[in-house]
Image 1 (cartoon, rainbow over the protein chains, first blue to last red):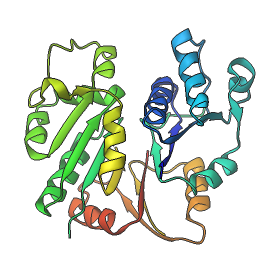
Image 2 (image 1 turned 90 degrees about the horizontal axis):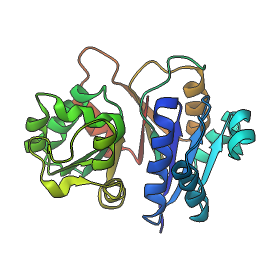
Image 3 (image 1 turned 180 degrees about the vertical axis):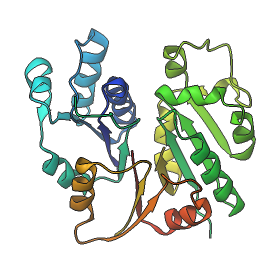
Image 4 (image 1 turned 45 degrees about the vertical axis):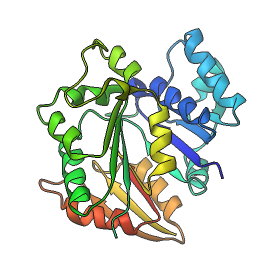
Length: 104
Length: 104
Length: 57
């Protein structure tokens, strides 16, 4: 049975690569989800935009707590509580990289 | 009985933990694989990276991350085989083939 | 379901909230890596006996 994996992306220095890692497991036939928390994505290159599209094409999703990421990049809005509930159903949880120093 | 252990490394800050956990796991007879991605590839330049590569059963890095970090892929870190300059599929291997999973 | 929470640094409010939700109704243990000399031997034993380990930042 395909594993379910969630990447928690809390630091803007790590977020775009975390989405690349999310795609990396999606292509390995896993259900792969990214949670972009408390950081805004920069302007996206075609490469990064395609990564997000491919994650979705492979039954994954890129969620975010930030309205700006929903408005600018079409990510799917989620709250911290909803993330917690989703994490309960995952086989692997990946707190990615290092924690941001603050919420800015 | 010792289980197999896969470690996915994404932080450049945890070399002492990686060494400590790998030494403890190997002392218990565990099979250990470590995969380095994104900024964690800077850890390949730590003086004890060679010791780590000899200690564990399988060690690999994300070659795209290595390039992004400014390193030349022809400059293969000590203890690594060229084929271990690899892709995110290594992460998938950790999840599928190892009983226990850690992110550092 | 036996869950192990490993902390690489001091947990902030967001992490505490997620841990609370994920842990509800489950048997949980925790291990703090953010100390001078972590007992790695003990940690590995805990990882081997857990069904799932989450290494928070």
